[in-house]
Length: 87
Image (tube, rainbow, N blue to C red; front, side):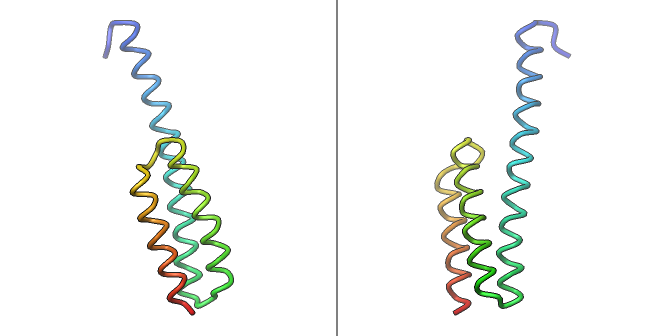
């Protein structure tokens, strides 16, 4: 355990950020799963609605620095491709 005050603070701050990032990542995973569930069911309308929400969730996570912009872009692109194949 750290003895220096600033090191103790760093531990607390990193723990807080870790929890926040974990919650955000979990939300993104849930949104993505909903898109793929709608695709599996063959429901194009539900898939498109879930895609909009998932895209928004991924963009927000990227804005908060949880994901790299290229990772987010790739993820959104693959989701779009999967939904468009449903046609």
